[in-house]
Image (cartoon, rainbow over all chains, first blue to last red; front, side, top):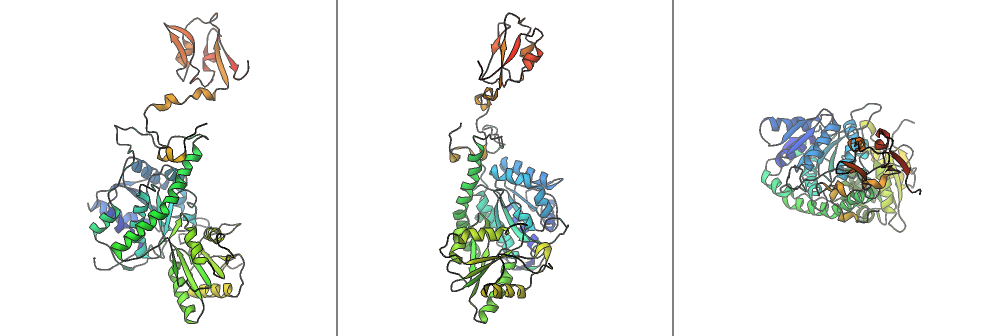
Length: 387
Length: 94
C-alpha cells in the first residue's frame, strides 16, 4: 500500500484511469469535470498510459466516439458534467441499448438555467431512465473506489451496461482530501482484462452494431437492458465484496448508519451523506433515536435493500439534490416505491436542497430531523428557499 | 410477428450474420403492387434500370415481371415506363 496523498476528487478519478489504462478516452472538457481529462491527457502526453486519447468537438461526439470504440472492442472511459451530459442525452440511450460498457465520470453540476456551474444532481437525473448504471460517491476516496468498482460492474458479462460514477461538483471534485491509492498491480488484477463481445475489428466475424428495430423487436431489445439491470445487483455486491478484500473498505449498494434501533431516518446521496452522519451522532448524543441511509447505487435502485433499512421506522426524510417541478423529486420517488413493499410503511417526506450549489449546513439537517420527529413537514418540501 | 424471446436475441440487437437483409421481406410494406401489361411492354428495361430494390425480373433480356418479396411498391417503374405498360394496383383489393 502506498503512502496516503492529498488529492481532489477529479484527480482521484484520473489516477484510477491511469492505473486501469483504458484503450480509448474521448472527452470534451466541462467544469467541474475538466481536471479529470486535463490530468489524464498529461498521462497520455507523458507516455504513462497507452490510451488513444481523442479530443472531441463536443460531448455528443465524445460519447459517440466512445460507443464506436467500445463496439470495436476497446475498454473506454470518459467524463462530463451538467450541460455536457445533457448534450449526450441521445447517445446515453443508444449506448445503453447497444450494451457497450463505457465508464463515465460525472462531476455533478446543475443544469441551466439560470446558468450556474455549481453542484446538484440534476444532470445525472437526466440520465436516470436511460439504462445507465449509476454510482454516487461521498468523498475523494469513494470517487476513486467507485471508479474501480464501476469498471467491474459495467464490464461483467452478466451486465454489459455503461455506468456513471458520480461525485458532487466542486464539493468533491475540487476539494483536497486524504486519499489512499492501491498498488497498480492490485488494481489491474481487480479490474481484470477487457473482454470484447463481437468486436467490430474482428473482420472474420462481421457484425452490425446499432441497427434499427421495428415494433416487433424494439421492446425485447429494451428488455435486455432491464435484465442486465436486474443482474447487476448481485454483480455489484460481488464487486464490492472483492473490493473490500483488496482495500479493507466495506461498501454496499445502500448503507445504513445507526439505523438498527432508529425510529427516524434520513436518506441522502453524495457528499451530504457525511454531513448526515455527523448530525446523527449529535442527535444520538442527545438520546434521539435517529439514523441515516446512504445510497451508493442509484441505478438500478436497490429497493429491497432500502425497504429493509426503513421497515418499522416512524418517519423518513429524503434529501433530494434535484427537483422535478410539479411532482416529488427522483430519490424521494424511489424511496416511496421501496417503502410501499413494507406493511405499515413509515411516512416519507421529500426535502429538496442544495440546488445550484447552495450550501448545506448541519443545523438544517437537525431542523429536518426535528420536523419529522414531531410529525410535521409537507410531503414535498423546499428546504431554505426564500418563497 | 417475430417470436424470439429477449434473451435469445444478440445483445443490443446487433446483427451477427453478414448479408442477412436478403431474409428481410420488405415487400410486406407494399400498399400498391406494380403489374405489367406485356401487350404494351417493349422490353426496353427502363423499369429494371430505375428499380431501387432490384425487383424487376429479367430473363433472356426480356422483362418478365416483378419479385414481390422485396418490391416496396414505390411506383418508380410505373412512373418511368415510356410505354405506360405498368400500372399500380391496390394491395388487398381484387
